[in-house]
Length: 169
Image (cartoon, rainbow, N blue to C red; front, side):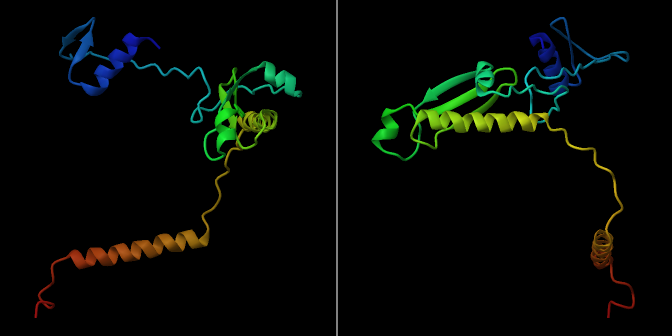
């Protein structure tokens, strides 16, 4: 997206009574129309469903070719050994920008294996499409709960009314 588009969108959201045209503020007329384009994100977003499946290589070497590997010092307890060795591993799958980290083991190789397994399971989860829900009939308990709540609500409403002539005494 262009920055000018975001700037115009910001103006239309925060100042709906003013229009920004070519950098000038103008009062909106009768025929002023705002168009907003929805652009799908470049990287996968957990809230945006992916349209195509992610190919996952069978071998670890093939998967590692598509990834960027970083090593760093693990945080947390462990004393001097943790502070001196770079045993923690972070693997980023570049096509989908999915990240997996592991710092559980003492050796970098074991962490790398665990991290690869985590990444593989995350990529497989990206390929899973949820089945479309088939609407079913409401259970009897749900209907009874709704009726019970309505009954309680009506009692509360009756208590809000002014007392009648009979009830004042």
